[in-house]
Length: 322
Image 1 (tube, rainbow, N blue to C red):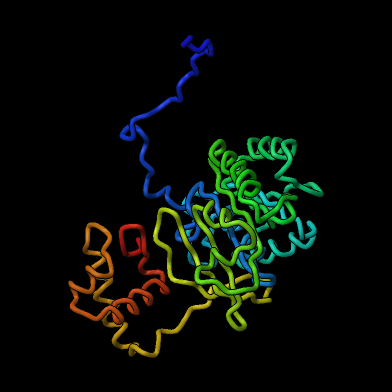
Image 2: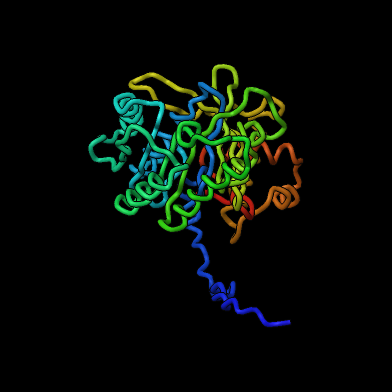
């Protein structure tokens, strides 16, 4: 049989895993506990669940270097770039003005930029190229695109079409070392997992390094989080307040009535001492065994410490907040 005359292809470059530069712990988060550094993901929810408000909250936090929702620190702030297809620039300015005012920040001094175009189509090569050129010029830490349905005229139920658009955003993220947040609508029907409520292909949920899911919970909004390479905090309760200007606030939950506050406070203090004395994060099981307390008590005490900003949960367990 004659040999093929087809020229040999150049092999792909490879690298030993030990030569890959490790991710510094302080660079793990863009917004601590909420969004991974240089992560892509979905902020999803049904209509009127404050999706754009939360997206703007994260953008203002990153751009101003102030904690998101008053609690979640931004280790390395920088410019944020937004395109919100369903809000006029004047309406978006009012939202951002309220978020900046709640932080005591002058809007003029916050490096938050709006993509000043009438439309953006992520399924068009020309628009993707212009977006890449804009990102290269602005060098944002965070890019917010809101909402997906206005950004691509594709079949959201087609995994091939959805993955093509999301893949292009992943390439943009890797080439320019930024985080990308895409707002997407959820179906009205309930599902066992929040990611399953997202409208269209399951590729939306699978794509994310960090995903945020919003759902109505009475007069409030419940925020559920998930991360690809880090533990997520418990669900959070949010509320949109109107004074002095509209902005989101984190609702501090009361200690569950099943455990007496005095019990929680005493155990929480002991847990905090244990975490501060430990050279490494501790799991809930380790704390339970060390302190010889019930799972329920340890969980309630940890939740109390977390709500007060005294402890945080990471990939390896719980640690005291510096």
